[in-house]
Image 1 (cartoon, rainbow, N blue to C red):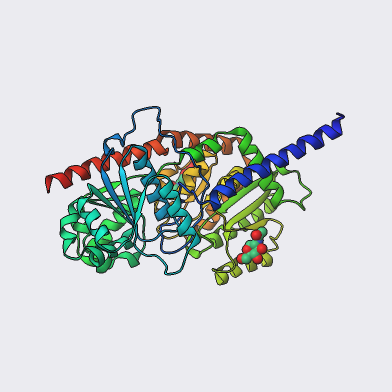
Image 2 (cartoon, rainbow, N blue to C red; image 1 turned 90 degrees about the vertical axis):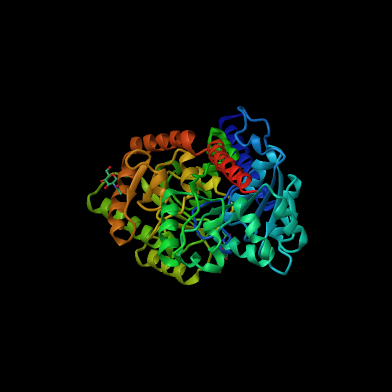
Length: 475
Ligand SMILES: *[C@@H]1O[C@H](CO)[C@@H](O)[C@H](O)[C@H]1NC(C)=O
Ligand SMILES: *[C@@H]1O[C@H](CO)[C@@H](O)[C@H](O)[C@H]1NC(C)=O
């Protein structure tokens, strides 16, 4: 084969590869396996937030003794406020599979289901059934009996609190000592008595970050005059499947090239001369996520580069999570800003998507620009770090517990006053390849040290142990 035909062949092969990988990703996504949830959002109410492929098989032979091993043959009831592709339910599903992996008996209840058939619910339920999770109706005698019999009940999200009185009625008091309440929200409207009045009496609360735990402690006291139960902070971890892609150089490169090609077809620049920044949100564009301020900062960074005549590679911003059918007003504002500042060739909007890996593989820097109290945890942050990306994040919420300022990324303040610092940080990372790579590597090491699935399992295991003891003592 001559040189040309060889390279054509290689290109074709590569394209096939890319297509195959994307196909695998989308098949497993549509098949809705989703062993992972992205906690870019602390809101779980009804929004589809996006997600992650993951994989069919569950590796049940761990390298070391499974920390959850003591849960073998325990009966665990998981109560989810809803079943959707948003962070909360998917995380609870992850727990269901971890528990099934050690031989626990796991029963699942979805409290709020739409009356009509729902494809997502259908496939998620089947996913669970396949893995031996029992799915039962939220109401009725079976639900009550299971709750009374269970060794442990996990209520997922504040909203799931509605289920207690509605279904258990006078039996509520009997089950409270064995309830672990897993909370992922950092929003004011959850502090309502009908949702959380039983909170002080459950065995414990498990919360994704110290910032969120503090917030709950203050607010329950101030708004409702109630006290939190014993509270455990459990940072999340990356799934094994995500780590596998992140650590597979070939897969990563193929995904990277594929996504870059799809974004930059009409560009005259070669793919590698650009620096891609991304402001990534599965759950769609919304003001709280700070895409508007991100775009302003991005614009400022281009201005700085122009003004100072800096030599930097061409930068592109990718805003993932676009959904014109939902957040029209805010998104129109974003798009108008892009037009007004003539940034069309610098900013790509990508529709809301379920697959995170291709985009993370394609970019150079993750911008986590959540505003106000920030992220509850921000799972996208640890995912990006797994892919050795530096993170430019707001100094708020869970982000501060993940990103080490100056080491794995750079923090800027939330709000308008963060725009210029973020712009400067963008320029800094665009100019300094070495710094970018070093920070990325540091981030990866931090993930390996603290944010893997087995770390999360260990943390959850020690909580479950205490809750079981608590339940036994009060029986
Ligand atoms: C993105 O979503 C819009 C509708 O919200 C749709 O019109 C458009 O075709 C989508 N783009 C792609 C590339 O799928
Ligand atoms: C992050 O570190 C930089 C110096 O590396 C410092 O200027 C900045 O104020 C720090 N930001 C926060 C939010 O701590």
